[in-house]
Image (tube, rainbow, N blue to C red; front, side, top):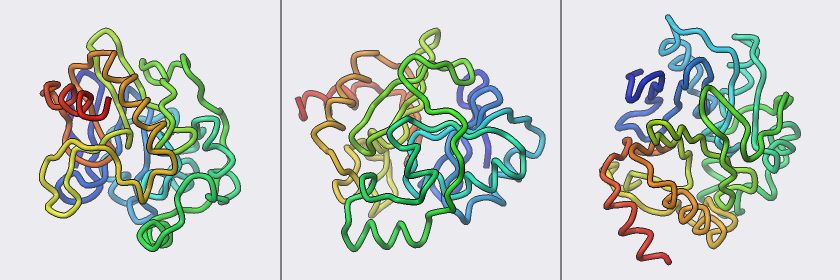
Length: 221
């Protein structure tokens, strides 16, 4: 399913109840779900043109179909600098904590390695959005910020889903998937200071009620 949630911003739901999402911003595909997601991405992009593919971070539920996307659409891959090596080599020792849950997800979802054409850094422009460095959930996690209408493509710095019920629930990402939770909290505080009006997530529905964000910030500050 693909739907426009802001001007030139499309949400692509790759699993039921928006449990894994990708986004199209102008003509750039952000994230690519798991390695099982490629057919859904192709269907969603049927009448769309893409010129590049970028990640919020290189975890397996975001890069799983990246190689297939880049090869099928003949587009470059852009990844946050500190995640680029893992994407290119398949060495995920620093990206994902080692535990039974993360190991299961990694084996089930991760796609093949692929060359990174550009290592993203703070201030780069992608599809009309500005790159923000927001590490913690992964070393090279980035978000995409459009100041003119205060839209934020956030990846997994936060989630808006209870993984047990799949209902809306704004929270930090689980520690089993987050190598540096304290650093991720700093990234949450950073994005809250922007005062966004719309936040999208790798997991869960878009958020417009920012009271939920500020309550979470008060709790973790």
